[in-house]
Image 1 (cartoon, rainbow, N blue to C red):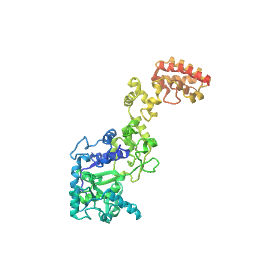
Image 2: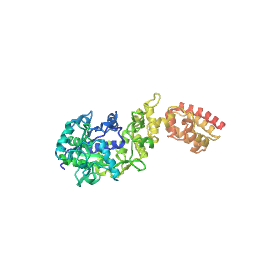
Image 3: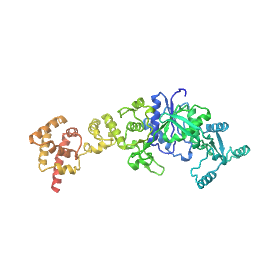
Length: 509
């Protein structure tokens, strides 16, 4: 194959929301194109109008935009090889189908759906359950290979419904080299005469896909493993047209977390994690959750997806999109299926959250909390909480004490750590805090350590109770940082009120 400019395409069908497996296919195409200074094309394959779902095309475009996978050519973008929606290209396909008929690679078939069903039923009675329209059975069907030419012309002239089928050669080995899987060999006796052109005037996926890839100068076809059975037909179609075939790479399946079967669109919410990049609501009002709405960073989602079926050959796991472009090769894509790991996905999110500047997190935090807070205050809150958080929403949830004084106190801590002497210890510590000036975390910490020495107590006798009074919780970030941030006045108020409340609780218990 002669060297030519790298052009790849992602060609989803608008038959529903874009599954994360589809996003991974788009990502690998994008990475390969950018790595090789090529072009990434988005093409919408909507030839199957019976399965068209309203809103699906818009969903695909929105999801890719959120992920940062930006096409160089496609719907709404333009390019020299448009239009990029197959239904808008339908006038070009009949001529290609007719060309195959003239070359002897295809034929007209007039069999009705009833005819085909009858043949299947007869085959079942003859213990042949998997009947196919192929190089053997076509001779007993109603098509232009069995009917007289004048009858064929008459049927067409009378607008009798027909399809155009590919004339699969008999007993021929089809060979092609797959970048991921190596050499693939399939004998045509195992293949049927696929429909290329339907009676509704639309091409099938097989014809439209090949014609579009050729006319759009696609150099590499990178797609899911589910299309591998179609590849021999596509190779033969290129041969039939006399065109140079692109290079193929079939990506491994995404598997359920237990490795038992392909990860499907219905597995997500059922198993407790999203399988779609963004929320999708069906026409019936059923909601399927997405990574965006769950609070994931698009970069974390993309980083996770890249590793489902590919690895860089190093121990590095965290990659920016630019770093993925630099490291990506199809040769390091695995042949075997990739098990999805929801906990690993959360780990990626945690790493990206921790790496995000506090000022940027503060901006996001300000949009999800009630009330107006100084941005510097929120930045410090994020700095204290992000090591313990997975999502930005965890910060006001687990760190609610930064915004409101506690109304409840952790029962286990009250039971285990609040002794008879604790009330007096905490009251004296409160008095000590009142005298501190300035009220900084460093000064609070020094004073705290001095206080422990003076009363001859270990940290476990004082710090848990201090945390309880200010936060109501058993765990969290540095208490010296917390008290300094909420300020002396608020700290003293919470301690005085908390001591009374907890003392009352202890009496009641």
